[in-house]
Length: 88
Image 1 (cartoon, rainbow, N blue to C red):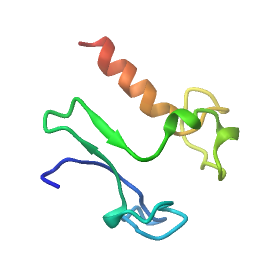
Image 2 (image 1 turned 90 degrees about the vertical axis):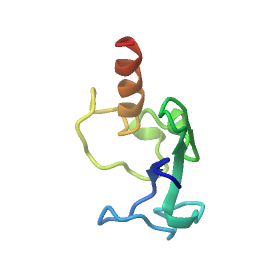
Image 3 (image 1 turned 90 degrees about the horizontal axis):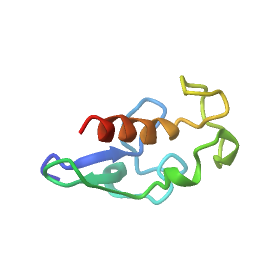
Image 4 (image 1 turned 135 degrees about the vertical axis):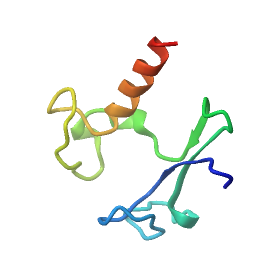
């Protein structure tokens, strides 16, 4: 995709997968998101805004370093966007 793949669904080994449940929609090569050529825009299939707290996740999210123990790993995406935007 011309280097515009932004996100992929991956298996337990971190490899792109088309297999459910790691890839809930069976997208080719695990494609989950693409970005514009300049990197400023992203289109993605996962909906991280629906799962910012750990209890909102359909399956238990692994324990990772997050701002608070009750936060899901997706919260990091919004934090990174905030940090980037505040530096512009």
